[in-house]
Length: 244
Ligand SMILES: Nc1nc2c(ncn2[C@@H]2O[C@H](COP(=O)(O)OP(=O)(O)O)[C@@H](O)[C@H]2O)c(=O)[nH]1
Ligand SMILES: [Mg+2]
Image (cartoon, rainbow, N blue to C red; front, top):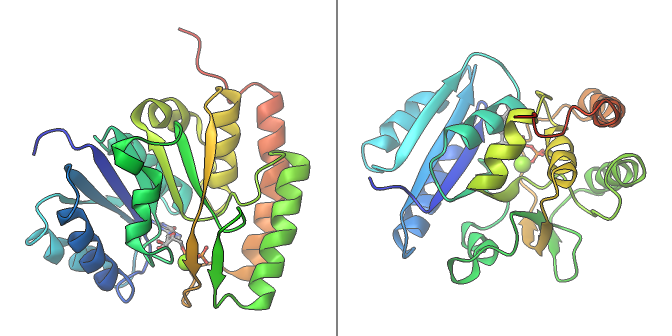
């Protein structure tokens, strides 16, 4: 394969049930694109057949790769995938494809991205959330309020699992990303701002998918704590490009 234009990075932990339909939709979609796309599934410590299913799909999807990691966490998975990717644009996408795969086109209209960092938003004008339970929405909005107050004023939705980075942005941002778990999105966007990358928001139609890997109480508390860690690390200057 020549250098791909787009890399799709799919973090997957115990996704044997949700991954096959997503890979099928991705395969169909990328075959319709006018440029080359590679797909990287980054899996860690799955106790189900996530890795085997991906290997099976590799037989029919030549541009599909699997990375298996020993360390846990979505943050680790995305960092590794972003830095292993070869695409000029690198798009992270949750394995449940709660955003229809065709919406990827909104991030790269006519093959040109809107900014170095483009994030899906379920809050921007024109966005739609479908089927989300009230309690999940409420927890998400409280978390976003904390995010805006503590680290990222102005961003209404940092947690959606679909974000596109130029190769330049990915290579500058991800080596500085440290958090292993769910708050890595906030950290990544904090680093993007520190480094001066513009962040554009794309309103999407988002369908709630059951089967979340998140432990609501435990993980939400950890995510709130992480915001203070991110603030401290920013203050210490850990999110600046290393001096050369
Ligand atoms: N590789 C990897 N992926 C993870 C991990 N935790 C979550 N994910 C993936 O992150 C994505 C979002 O997870 P999901 O459970 O749908 O979270 P929610 O939609 O935010 O409730 C899915 O693709 C998960 O498989 C992890 O520890 N490792
Ligand atoms: Mg999900």
